[in-house]
Length: 330
Image 1 (tube, rainbow, N blue to C red):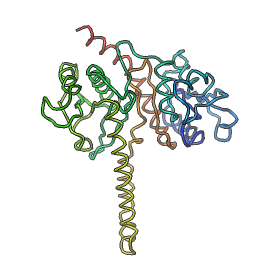
Image 2: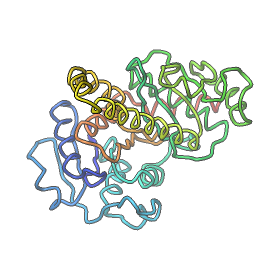
Image 3: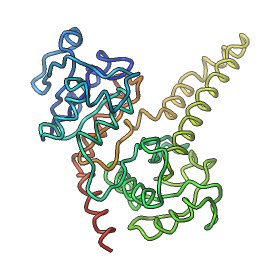
Image 4: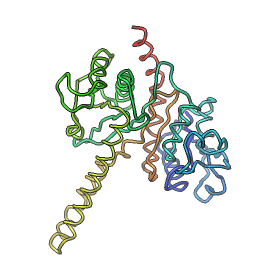
């Protein structure tokens, strides 16, 4: 199995990207890593490995590049070359911590969409109190959505939760303003009926206040709403830990208390870090495309590569295509 990796994408590239690649090669004996990027810039971080191959690229996608234009104009950019390798069958999946919009464009226009999927969805696994996490989609690949798109998100998320996360009969919920059937706007009302007909374990409407309590294994919404919920969770978590730090540094007594619970707080922070679950998958494409967090360290890159590997191993994209095909035929 070959995983293509964008060596130049992300805030900590190329050092942390390469470190994560080397860690993944040590952990998984069945993968090869093809890393794309400026060979001169990457050289100080590279180490010889019989399953690591470097492909020099003269360009890179910058964070402020206009996504579609960058993909079309910068043909020798590491992200574009990585996606092209997947399209050409030279790699089985790809991972990047770079420009999210550009990666979505590369996925859509280079890797290509699964037949029957109208719109791909961006989906991370977010943490829950019990540590199990839940798959959340769409997180911004499409600001607007139609009811059939939410049905497809539910199918894709369910397959991913079962194949990659190992959850039997994953519970799929529709994000709404109330749990009762008939709640919401025209989009959620129509999507509710379609999700109820889909070959998934649909548990009905769920509210945003219950997401971190593990109310469902997969939660479906439109990209506009999903992105706002994600950023609210991120901001709340960040503010919570900032307030904790202020409390524990307020006096000598509180500093001593902090020293006693330091390991517990570190564990809590790790538990709430969604990069521990991997990156955000672009579901609905012909091959796995994983968006690692822009500030990914080596561990986050390792987890994103693990995620890509598992998707390939269990043929998640193929299963999505077959399942959606059956739904369309009925």
